[in-house]
Every structure is written in structure tokens, then in C-alpha cells.
Length: 524
Image (cartoon, rainbow, N blue to C red; front, top):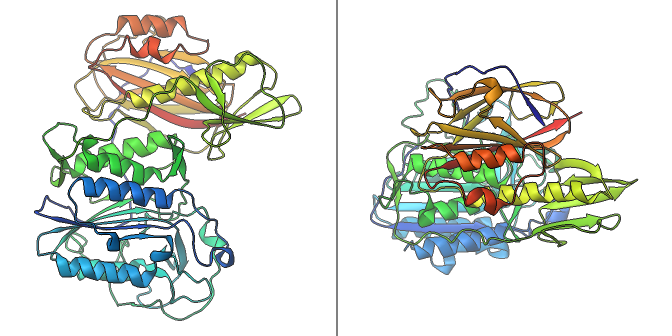
């Protein structure tokens, strides 16, 4: 829960995205050749100590369907799933692309599977942390460093040798900030063997920006790199979208490539539109827990044309899937269905309390196990969030919300400094918080604070204090070109209560509005 401070001041916000990866921009070209890899089941997963994935093959199938629908040259021989996704098969498929393409064509390479960090086995020993980022293929062998691994240095060499083409590389893997998805951290993977990785060449690091005397503007200027995480040390979760496991980056990129990133509807997606759209979608899908990276930073250069109809939005549902373990759910729940697979909330009952988790294991709330009203408040909150996500306007730039104190777990009493930027000329702001209990708190405009509905200047800075209850808070900002009197009255009516029905809010909201939200976690 959040408490308003004294009347806030306006601050200018400079957003810096700290990334590690490849450099370059990908203009539109005559023909695009695809290579798609998706690996759930690894040959030696048990020996390696990492789990079987559930969504990587789904990612690859979705991306293959999307790319083919856009006319990308993608035969079955270049869609490598599970057992077919060996390192040798990948290199053969890569060579077939180089043999088929002509200078100036585009190569689109997507990878969904495990990624890792491992000790550098050979030259160039160019990593400040002495760890190479690697993509792990089906035949990865933890006991043999020459099998099934593609290091950042080797991938760099492959891309460097393909300078005649424009490469768009999408890596939905863990540690992707330095190259590369895994449910296991680097420490979970054995570091056996001491020989060099196969195919090494003495080339600069894929991602080391501080190498002396290096001209990164000239290195791999033909490559655009889209990564699941901007930090090479990070692991990332799988999510469920419409009941199906996926990687958030793959899902977002499929929608972007199918046209939803074309915010100005000019039939071309620029790299800036691609970056803005993918970052917003991934953050929304993961409740602000995953931060994709892109290099080079978005600009007005073309990334790809738009030639196919956008994917349909996720199907609307009148009910929210919940999973209940350790005891029965209270009677009288509204708009909820028991679903052990496709659930948004998991209630774990013990000693009269229900701890509420997300599908990824984030602790969202602690509520009374027998009180129907508090369960209904949480269900109402997440139904409203889902509806707001569906109402995201793909024809407008995303609302930018930043938190100065970062994304750590914040404790009660902490001061949090938020900044809200409409990224447009819209100045009428509605701001509210959905607390860990599900309660709605109306934050702006407040008459007692002397707030003006139309901001004189943006970004808008607002300090908030963390107050009980703890859990996941979601701050929602709505920027509109005109004042939304009926929505403002509705939010004031529900202040301090469970949120209203999604239809009641959205049906009153003007079409000129854009919605942004920011999830963060608090503790006592």
C-alpha cells in the first residue's frame, strides 16, 4: 500500500538502459531468411543438474508460424526442436542460410532454451568476470566442454563472418545480456573439463564494451540483438500465456513481428518501435520482473516491414484461474475458477492463513484463509490488471514509469520516488495503486493536495511511502488527452475498497488514453 506525500515536484527523467550484447541496426531488406531453435528436453539434463523447460518449443513453434506468415524463408530444416537442435545441426542450418542469401538480405535467428555462464576455457580471455556466456544445445554435455555449447566468442565469430547480411538475433535464454534462458543459475552447472570450446577464434568479446582500443560502432554494425535480459548474470522465468508456457520475450517478439509494434501504422516497424513495444510487453507479462535488452538502442531506422495482420489479443475471460492447496477455498468466491494448470494466483493454506503466490513463485500477499471478501478483493485486482493489459493501445507509445530506488523488495516506511512520463502530448493523469490486499488507492488528482488534472509539465514526479499491507503493489497510470471525469469519479468511489469491475472502468475510458503499470514488492 502506498501513502501520498506533500505536493510533489516535477523532475526531468533520464532513462539509461545498461545493456551487454551486439551492436547494429537492421534496415528493411528484400528477403529474410529464418533460423529458429527451441529446446525443452536436453539429452543430459539430469547430469547437468538443470530442469526440463516447458515453453521453449512452444516459443519456436509460435515464432516459426509467425515468420512464415510474414513471408520469411524458413524451411523445416531450419526449425530445430529438441533432439534436432544439436550444435552440429545448428551450424549446418546456419551455413545453409549463408549459402542461400545474397548480400543485403536479412537473417533472423531466434533461440529459446537454456543459457549459462561458464569459466573461460581458452583465448580470448576477455571477460572481466572470467565467465563466458553460452547457448546450450540439445547435445550439451557438462563433462565435455566441446559438446553442445556455443560461446559468446564463437557466436561473435559466426556473425562477424556474415557481414554481408543484416542479422536480427533474438535470444530468449538466461544470461542473455552477455549473449543469452535457464531455470538454473550458473552455479548449478558443473564446470568440468579444461579444453577449449569447439570452433574458438581469437575475436573480441561479444559484449565487453570496455575493451581498450575497440571501436564498438564498427564491430558487428550489421547486427541487432534482442535479449531476454539486459544483465548477463540474470536468470529468467517461463510464464503462461493463455494457459500455454512461453518465454515472455518470444511471445512479445512474435506479436511485434506480426505488426503490433507498428505504432504509427505506416507498415514499417522501426527499431525504436520494436524496443518500446517489446520492453513494455515483457515487463507487463512478468509483472515488471524481467527487463529485456536491445542493442543498438532503438532509433528511427527500419527493423522490418509489416505485411500481415496482427495476432489477436488474448481472449477475454470473465473468471480468473486460481489454484488452492492445503485446504478448501472459502465459499462465495466471485469470478474465480479452480485450475491447477492455467492459474494466475496460487493460495497455499496453513494455520488459518493463505499465502498467495504468482505462477513464478513470487509472494504476492498473506490473507485470512476463511475470509471470502479478502480473496475476492485479490481476484478483482488481478482481473482488472488483466483487462488493463488487454486495453494497452498498440497504436501509441508506452507510458514510461520509473522508480528511483530500483526493483529490490521495499520495506514499510521506505520513501519511493516514482516518475511518470506519457511519452506523448497527453497531460491528463489518473493515478491509482492496487495494493497487496487488492485494495484500490486513488493517488492523483487529489483535491486536498491541490492537484490539477492536467499536468503543466512531464515527466511527473511523485513520492510515495510504503505502508501496510505488504506484498505486490501495482501502480497504474492513465494518461489521456482530455479529462476523464466519469473514470475519476469511479476511482474516487472505490478508493479504499476492492477495485471495480473491469468493464465499469474501461467502458468509461476514452479512446485517446494510454495505460501503463508498474509492479513492485514490499515487506513488513
